[in-house]
View 1: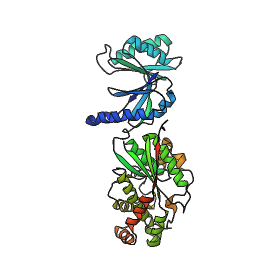
View 2: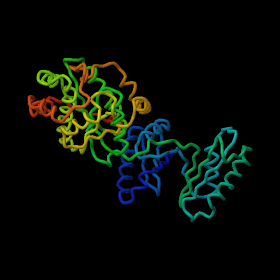
View 3: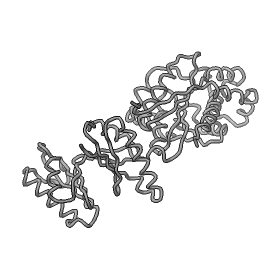
View 4: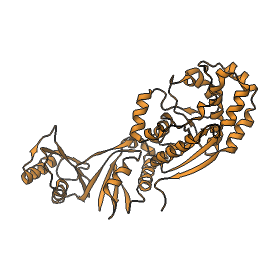
Length: 389
């Protein structure tokens, strides 16, 4: 058996809502590790503890915990009574047969009931390690750092502090509907909303049979991958080719892209309402393409009543790509496909579409019928991580 000691940061600032956030974090930790073996989550002052039973693979639990939003850092630790002898025994096990060039002890006494101060513990335990091993002490650039956290009844000893993803636990900030393309940007936008505690419903627009099913397959793969961060997901696949065809037959070519975006937003909003979502999310970045100028983004906003959140609005493509690589979606996103936005695209789309021009163009469209068709013809798929036995 071993213990995973979990520290949080932002949750500690929530005061009255802290118990709610911690309960959700504990649920998410349990869900993330449920298939690995017996894992029990305990809540202590300022930290959570995962007690991992026999058979739980340490590397696998580290991988799972590293993706749970709300965690600042975590460690595989030894949990012992708060006595010097027990601490020294745990340290002996923790340092094992290593041979670092230097070491230091970072002891923290969380409660004053323990007779030694943090500095006194550092000296006592450091002297113990040096006498046992002969290693050199270095308080600034130590190769090995031995951490000791002392609570009233128990102490945690560990030598490695691993970074968590930060943010807030998924499930504490409501639900949003993310427009998921097959590209690099929208998966990152959805991930960033999960990091802020939102549960994300995915909506993907495709143009089958006018284009291949590659974008649908990528959307399924991306939704499945992102489910590793929120444990359950639903993906709506909306056929959009016929709707685009109706726009092409009636609207001036320069306005088509904005009209497509407005229809997507309306359809996504209708789905969002049925899913109890409180906002839409897109991967748009200001000025990246013609449809993402301030004027055109405003025209899309005008089409719906739900707020449209754009977590990537101030990021450039390189910044977004770096984050896509970090979360593991980049390789899926760069696979070749035929996105619906490539269908019926004019050579010179409008970059500064006026409200008057959009209103005039939409008079010729039966918007209610197009939106209803998109919603009615949408299919959906469920995802779960880890999958149920």
